[in-house]
Image (cartoon, rainbow, N blue to C red; front, side, top):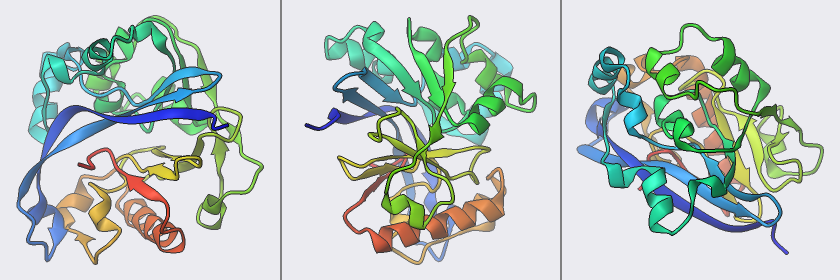
Length: 259
């Protein structure tokens, strides 16, 4: 029996991209793309989120939020929030038992203060960024719960997986091989990608804007590279994901902004 019994992609906000400015030799126009959150149900562990999407918590620090939406053309309504979408499905937010984060970004952490009880899981590197990185934007601080929440770092995965041909380390996010994690830093410090083997889905977060970068010769513009945490790592990760895609065409790649 599958360990992951259901998986859904929830659009929890939207972001505008001027695609022609972000990729060299691209004829793409301005697009409004979703900010995706993954909701899974694990047979033993219950409901799990990967990221939490946008909420009003992002607006608590008005100055930081004003700067943020100039840099990131983000928009969302109350009905877009993960809390509203859970309630629409007649799910109480207390059903969320665990949250996995891809990186320390306001769009990833937005609903954390609104979830009543959960365990936060991430790589040790990402947990260090969350706890100790004083350079993080203040808007992230406003979307992180003030009370202490249980946090746990991943252990290394010791089984077999196609990820090991492309990534030096593979981590076991839930301890049973049902969700694997790899380092895809570049767009952000300690960014993590998640692979669900039973579904053959790889959630690549903000490693690129969306999956079009895997199937074409799109190359990031200087403007796009200037927006990344580490431009060299960003290019390297795209090359690694392209290799993984070529070697494993049955894997479906989903990014934070996939339609």
